Length: 197
Image (cartoon, rainbow, N blue to C red; front, side, top):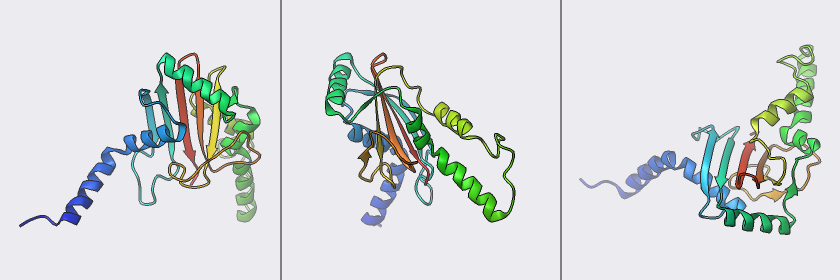
């Protein structure tokens, strides 16, 4: 008895999907930021590491690419000339928008009002301050270099596949982002992907 071609192809696709999630993430980031082909991916962390029933909810990816000296110099020159990258450090106001601190504080206050329950003590683990939220968020990012460039892209949904908008600054909290950090001291490009859906 011969296997049914459609079933065999479907099973092969399922088997490949689990095996190539890293390659899929890497390919998406290489395309989005035009990472040179010779660049090596030296760090990859992803959570969740597998697609669930609704995809990869609450996605967090950190990927670092190492470039040769010549490739890095060429990439940095192109980035500077493009006007699409900003000089480091990232302003605190922008970090607060990436972290979604205002949205989190408002959601907590709204939940307390709607439930009729008082908010836990300010600064506690159940009601962290805006500064505590920002500190926790900043610690979760790749360590930003003292000099270099950064770029923020947002999509609004499906951060890895949807069209993205480059954001030189942010005037409101975002629900997803790609943050790229160009570090001349290590010749690396560190990318953080984050979604709150």
